[in-house]
Figure (cartoon, rainbow, N blue to C red):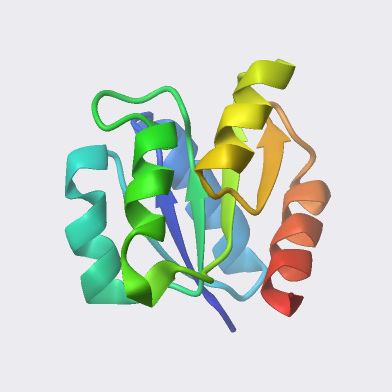
Length: 121
């Protein structure tokens, strides 16, 4: 099954996501430190990213752009998982290279569906 990398400054969120996704058979790796995310991504080579937007620097928008600048991740799906539910945030996220966008709170089945759809593209 696919390897999913999560980046969220809230440890509870990454722990819950890991538990949820592992139960669905996914391999997971997570960090609560967005400044360490690029090096971890290069080391782990995930198949898909789940990024929060509201994090200390770099925030999720910047991290998404930074990932897209790495040749290894130009086509790797990036799903934004955030509490921001406004059209401006969505537009900036997609402009930064996001593949999809889901707002917290979300239904676990909806997240799994978005992950599977992104991996099939």
